[in-house]
Image (cartoon, rainbow, N blue to C red; front, side, top):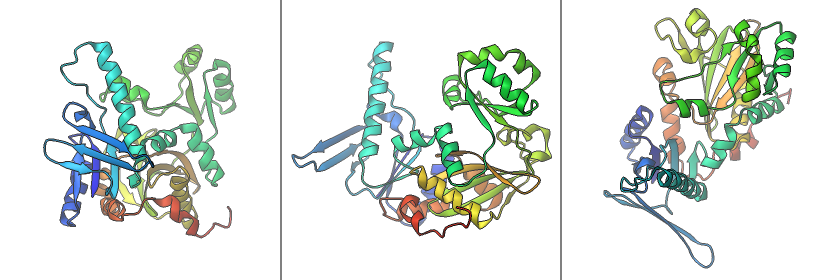
Length: 339
């Protein structure tokens, strides 16, 4: 039995569900926004600590014990019952329900793709990502996390102004809504003139990495799916391919060098994940530079543009019945000469 946790409108889940259905897999899809008003979720423990969990909706009752896998895809936060009208109370209930749901998913013994919520939250932290990637042998851009205007200006001068800025987290996107996106961008003279504003909030600054192409490397278990994003073909995507220019930007499969592919698998495993979407830059002189990893990154557009069978690999992972992902098997990978 597979439990898919995601929002109501999710093309990724729709696509994988169809493949699971064709394979005869038993699965249930749940939008956590229905909890607690339309979903009952109970956990009980015996005197010896034996756990039993029951999830009930209007359509079915699910015993959490025999679960083979949970796909923590794009779960929306709980929504308090409409009978609760006081906003302060609603805010409290929303937080309490979210903590409880995360606790439930974290406590399950089955495989969780990409990982239990607590592991995902830790893997999203940018400083930890860079430290781990560097320890595995990835080249990374020179990076500064700071809320010091003086440190920012010194970093800017040291790199002759060729630096980019990023947010330290995705909280702005969640706060401002889906119509807002803060892209990676070159630091401008205007930014330098407003350097004092850095003291209000930490910012990530990185040395600019020249690009031949950008790479989205999707890891599913130990399978590696690398795609070239020819972002330098158009000014619109030159500094951040997420601006998207589908008609001007070629997307092609890419063959990673074996040592880089192994590092990608090891990075995902080291972070406690069994899935991850890694962003790399292939420089004009042939170096592979790590930028970041999204533990729950979108992948369907890569599959549609390149034909890489990522959804099939996800189905295999969900149906494998194992309790762990890439982390268990990574020890069997051959070591690189440079590691």
